[in-house]
Amino acid sequence: MTDRENHGAPERVIFHVDLDAFFVEVERQNDATLVGKPVVIGGLGPRGVVATASYEARKFGVHSAQAMAVARRLCPQAIFMRGSHGLYREVSKKFMDVLRNYSPTVVPVSVDEAYMDMTGTERLYGPPMDAARAITKMVRDELGLPASIGIGPSKLVAKVSTEHAKPNGIFQVRQDEVEAFFAPQPVRNLPGIGPKAGEALEKLNISTLGELVNAPDGPLRRALGPNNADHVKRRAKGIDNAPLRERAKAKSISAETTFDTDVSSRSELEKVLKRLSERVGTRLRKSGQLARNASIKLRYGDFTTITRQRTFPVPGDGDQTIYNAAHTLLVTAMRQRGDAIRLLGVAVSGLGEQAAQLSLMDVNPTAESDTSAAIDAIRDRFGVESISRGSV
Ligand code: TTP
Ligand code: MG
Image 1 (spheres, rainbow, N blue to C red):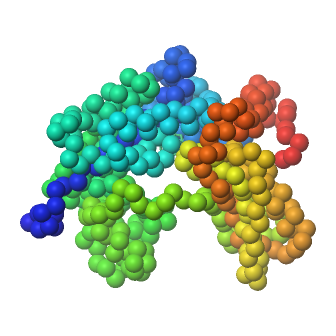
Image 2 (cartoon, rainbow, N blue to C red):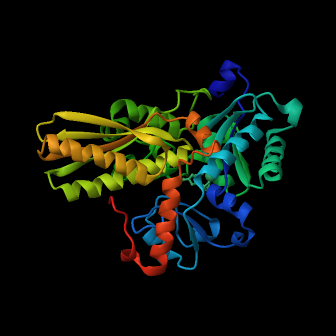
Image 3 (cartoon, rainbow, N blue to C red):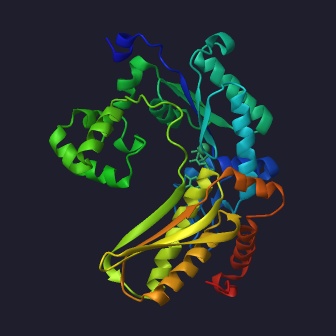
């Protein structure tokens, strides 16, 4: 007998809906010549990063967060584009509105992804598979975009199911199928297992969720920390009782690096600052929000730590916007105290929807991104050295 039967509560029906190759499919709406071809969207400059790739390009190994230079090597025949970020935010809103036709509980988790509570909707829409088919059809009819849906008794199971549904599919896992579904999955498929935890588990010879469930607690706790180990083990069994509406959205997005040896070289710090800005920018754009401020965090060799914050002229999500503000802060801080630095961090805050409305009022927060695109286009034609921005 399962826990659920003990409690007599009805099985929850949670949908996790995620658009397929979101940025690419929006571009295809505007330009049908992109259909069926490998398309890669992201930063086109020399240090650019892939935001997303069409499934045709993924076959060559191209994926999100990869260096654009690597993507170009793997799939030189692809069409490379900077993308239209203001448009993605607008389409994202319409997508969430479509979902709200089917459930009062729609919880967006990123620009192209939401959880829906579909418990008790059978009388309205029929079995979950039928409801899911109706939703993907409406998304296709209204927005022209392909979506995939994972269905499960919890957010966790629904989310993992979506990976099996993609692209353009629906995949349902019922409560009594959860354990068997999870056991053979690689540990990294479990949301929350990042590269670090993945590595720690690898060292313990744990590669699947089934192995994780059966691993002895001692080593697991030493590898992941005592509280985290228990939590991860429960999730590896597919146990997740989290309500759909969890904590409030993150108030900030940050990335930081601790150096092996303290650094005082300005050019070295600028290089790292650039990389951190790009990492934060990528996550910000994925969240579909704009930020009002950027901040830096500096920890010196003696462990004193400072943070400094700066507000953007207009809310933005561009790597360059973030880098410019962070750079100004770094230069000022270094002038005040020139000691070697142990840790460098970049964050954005003041995240919000209110900011997105600005773009509809023609204050164009992506103007800088568009400039980047123009520069990138010239670079593509005449080589990297032909034009460089004054400030960098
Ligand atoms: P995802 O849903 O992760 O990716 P996707 O929609 O492109 O492809 P699929 O869901 O079919 O696997 O992210 C949604 C969008 O967010 C994506 O189109 C581009 C953006 N994004 C980034 O800019 N950087 C990233 O690292 C990721 C993962 C996404
Ligand atoms: Mg997606």
